[in-house]
Amino acid sequence: MADKPPSGEIFGVPYNFEKPSFRRLVSSYWQPDEGMLVRKPFGIGYTLNLADWRSWIVLAVAGLLLLQQRRGGETTTGSEEEEPVEVVVD
Image (tube, rainbow, N blue to C red; front, side):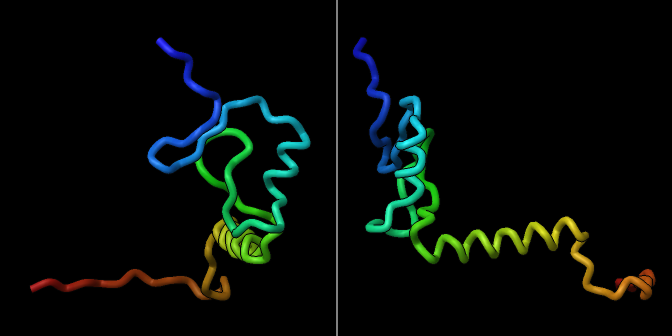
């Protein structure tokens, strides 16, 4: 049985299982001439290209959503308590 290559594509999705060096990690996350998504330096799929401004927007939105979730998603002022709602079904 032939050895499988450590990098390539399966159904159009890239994979790379070569041990990453520091230089390869940095160069894969910062590619100014590429789009928003680039191949991962290790593993399966794509990752964000930090040289693209759209990636920073995605990270900011994800951070804000995480912050909102950790705060409990409070939409009231805290002094207002929610009362139970009665639902009548005929």
